[in-house]
Length: 62
Image (cartoon, rainbow, N blue to C red; front, side, top):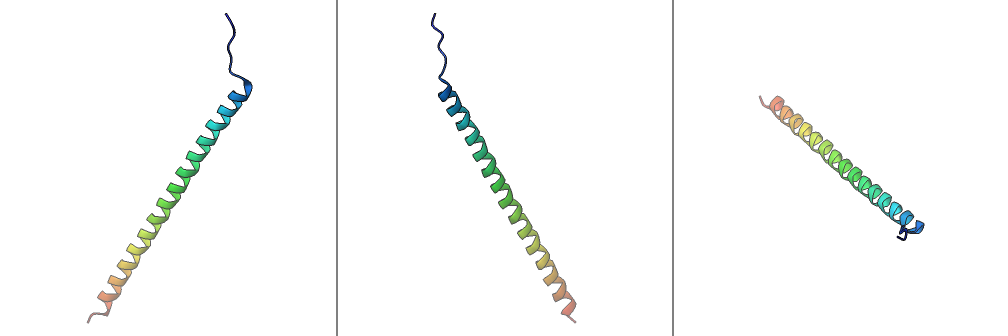
C-alpha cells in the first residue's frame, strides 16, 4: 500500500487559511462589541441629559 500524505505546501496553506479566518472573525467580533458599547454609552448619556432637562424644568416652574 502506498503512503499517501498531503504535500507540505498544502498543509501550510490550509493552516494559514484557518488562522486568517480565525483572526478575521476575532476582529469582526471586537468591532461589533466596540460599536455596541459605544451605542450603549451614547444612550446612557442621552438618558442622563433627559433627566437633567426634566429636573431643570421642574425647578423653573413656580
